[in-house]
Image (cartoon, rainbow, N blue to C red; front, side, top):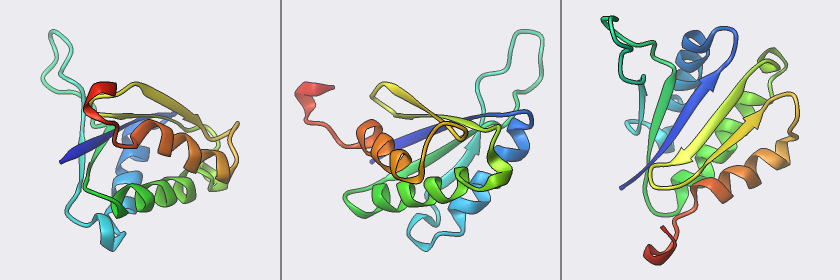
Length: 122
């Protein structure tokens, strides 16, 4: 199963990542597929901030549901300072800036970043 990795960048990345995790976990089609995580701890640190959300994707439906949920979450007015870096576990990253994208753009950007690609394209 493929994984979508979503890194949250904002003035409060941990709180926003927790909010996004809660939002996505509340969607029945994504239940049990969402996990909050973080990067490896920096040298000399005991832990890392939990600012990354991982979502397991299966065939078909979950990608469409994820795009719809992310679009709804990031386009809320209180999210205007949020940027999401989204990537497929084996693909390039794309950035979604809440200040610069419309609802329609978010869905298309996510489809391009997260669509399953044939093996030769990876």
